[in-house]
Image (cartoon, rainbow, N blue to C red; front, side, top):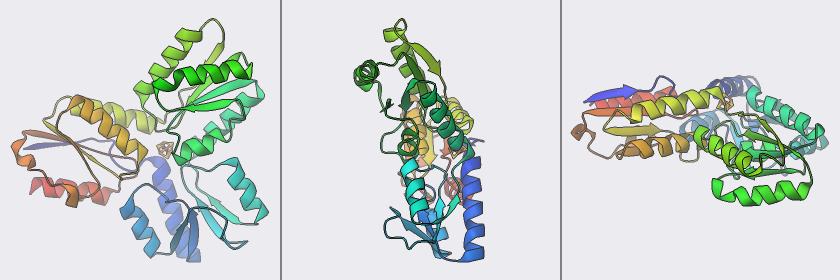
Length: 284
Ligand code: SF4
């Protein structure tokens, strides 16, 4: 059996930075709060919790002046305000690419745009970003919501529409949204297309397509709540009937030896150790 591992598998720059900086903070100060799981990967979070990371869902019950880590996904404007009110000591590890999108959104609001954010409504990054998009904005997750988006744009009375994206959104779905929106409304509005999907995501999705189209089976490694991992799985299963998603080597339950060629890709929050364990198990 030949195993092909995608070169772009594993931690992206933003995740590497947040994990390394968090480790430094824990080594220096000990127990530290983190608003939400630092990354969508249980193994990584478990390891950091053992070092003193305390994951919380809200800032509500955190004593004032506590140290709180903001993860790579970023947070809403309101969270920054609440942290200021409570006099919290924020360690802001929001990915610099996400911060750029927040700044871009604020500028688009000032310039009179209605902002359409292509993203997953329940994802923390999208929830954070939309809070910087002002009241004339909407998140679109799937194409079947396009009529609702068009109505929202009409109701706003604005004539300029910007289309931005969550950094881990599907490249293909973004292009479809732009095409349909501009085709249906090309004459009525001025469009500003800002494909803010991260290049790490783009490269990973392209490589996943390339590998999935030439193997007999495809294994995607990553957390079950990781948006970019689930996108990789969607891409793989659209091109390869035998696609599997696993969090760790323990989840490898099929008999992969029946396949000649097996492709392996991992999401942006999957640690090297999980990838190595999967490869080792496949080889054995
Ligand atoms: S996927 Fe890109 S934008 Fe998101 S955390 Fe990683 S480097 Fe940053």
